[in-house]
Every structure is written in C-alpha cells, then in structure tokens.
Length: 137
Image 1 (cartoon, rainbow, N blue to C red):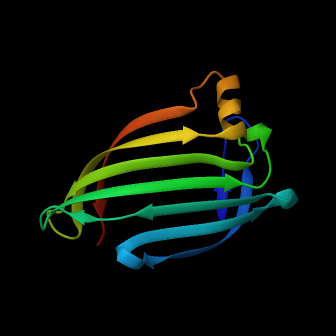
Image 2: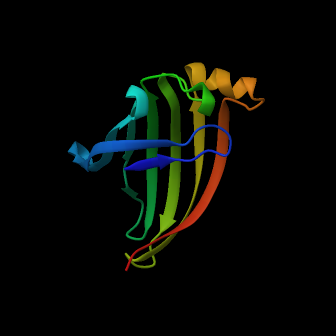
C-alpha cells in the first residue's frame, strides 16, 4: 500500500506489487508497480551499489526513477518518465548497526512534470545535500 499526501492537490492511494533483491554483480534493486483510482498506474525503481573503500568506509551510488501512466495535473505529475534521481552517499560504519552518512543527490523532472514545475515557478532540476544515520537493532 502507498499513500501520497499533498499540501496542494489530491491525495492518492495505491496498491503496489514489487520485487526487491540482489541482481548480478551485487546491485540492490527495488521495483514496484502501482495501481490507483481511475485506472492510474505508476512504476518506481531504485538501484544501489556498495563500494567498500575500507572495511568501514563505504561509498554508495544510487539511482531512482518514477513513471506514471496518466497525467495528474492536480498533483503536478506528467505521464511517462516523471523524475530521475542520481546520488552518492559516503558512510562510515562504526559497527553494522550504526553508520552515519553524508551525500549529494541530483534530481531532474521530465516531460509534463517538468512543465508543471516551471508553471508553478519551480526549477525542474534540484541538487540536495543529505546527511543521516543508518541504524538497526
């Protein structure tokens, strides 16, 4: 299940079916297909890879894309390839359960989604610096 909530626009509920796992050469993949109200469809895909620089220092390139089957002007989403994000994160694992990271991510929108962003006064592309903490227990 997926719920998209918007400050401006219409909230969307989706039913999803996905696959997650390791592809050849140890790429982690996550692909999910979604079906929503009024025949709306979407596809989300993510891929990432971990490069061990040392036993504790890990560089993680990643990519994410979203595709939609129908235009959704209320929420500023166009059909086809909506957005693509490419990024890289560098993390230091103090141990497997605790690892802070820093990174950068470039995100670009395409087609009608980019047109909706421009019409709303936003840029179709964005760069973000990220920092966080990966942990589990």
